[in-house]
Image 1 (cartoon, rainbow, N blue to C red):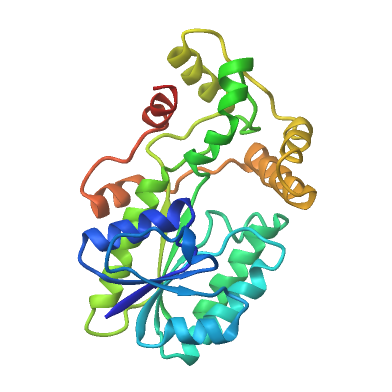
Image 2 (image 1 turned 45 degrees about the vertical axis):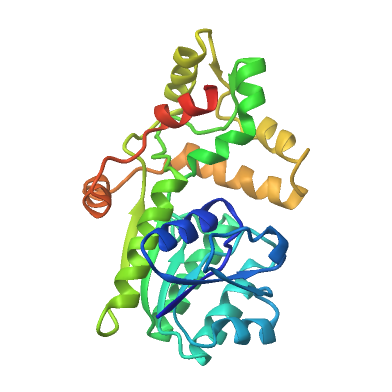
Length: 287
């Protein structure tokens, strides 16, 4: 049956589509701008967005399984709820939802609270769902390459509790495996929650030391104060979003984002290979 992917032109969604195509799935994507949807042959593209009810109904016709990824936005919760309701109305019962690790604990961070609410909605709707809860994306650090390379500072306030940064390629592959598992099942499967983490739990100081080794010169950790991070983020993000990123960083410092027992081993079992390390990711940035 057909699997539809939302958020398909973003970093994770595009990789999910490619993983599904590689595995022989019938894939459809929802895209605001089809001109950006340069996907492999055979992928059907429907123009629309999560607040356009008519486009959602067109996109969901004949679909059995939904990959729900909606980006951080001021109306993210409305997007999620509308999409889930139209999906159920359209006969979709099988869902893989990209949430976030500690969604229910970091309740003061808007996009964490949103995802926690969407998780509860999925459960109350009785959908057959896998909830994917990734930690901080390694790929986010692509945005700080200039600061690292040219200024010798790792600026993200990570703290000393540790964050198990995860590779978006690993996220996408687990998502594709779960989508196909649910789509091809004889009946609806119970809700499952999977924490998506990397193989190492890294502190701010450890991240700086990795970069020092790779660059062959001293890289300092910028420290736990989120104020400079918020101010710098506001140069290229809306101020409300820069503040939201500050709130997230504050929780990294106070709580960390540490895997539960068995998380890494479960992911290795699902993928049948080791998880990509931050060091390998960073080496690719340097190369």
